[in-house]
Image (cartoon, rainbow, N blue to C red; front, side, top):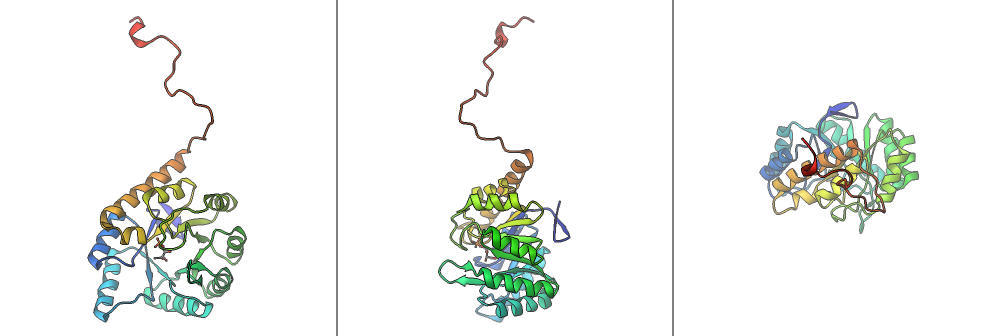
Length: 260
Ligand SMILES: CC(=O)[C@@H](O)[C@H](O)COP(=O)(O)O
């Protein structure tokens, strides 16, 4: 168990709820991933109100912690209003704050993100900001009152994995007491394991599972990878060496020549 914003949870995988082929496949994939936190977008588009209702019911039935998000917001005002609606709807002060600054890369706008964060924290929200891996921005978000940061691995939906492991490593070293979650751009279970091996507290992903030809099996794979990466981090990963070193001792007497 570990502590996320004063809640004890087990899994270190946060899962998205968009773009699944059906609500049933989404529910099955969420279950297979063994995630404890699911993120939902308030600005989600559904063709019919009935489809929207099925979606919300399915999310509720999972019994998971819901982390509403402000995906699709491009301004402080939009993000703050969406967060307030999310608090009413889901009865939670958690908000994954996304304020997009560039339509091409979907890169968060660091200035608007900081402004919206300050405003929402003043209103009593627990802000989970989706940010870049910029150290100075991250420090300012912490100064604003964030206990959790969600730097990107790569732009949303690209599946490129950790494009700047150096920056992510620096963040982990410089912020040992902050909960750090790699959010977005994770394409394969090995990317998720790499984030966990760096000592990140969790990873959040959506596209790689929802858009897989087999979301349920992929979700199971991601759940296992996150656990494997965390085990490796906790156990301590061996340092790399330049010189080869035999893993089988060559000294001593072979066992078939030993007496007795
Ligand atoms: C669902 C959600 O919150 C996304 O905005 C998130 O950032 C995940 O990104 P990927 O779809 O790249 O995993």
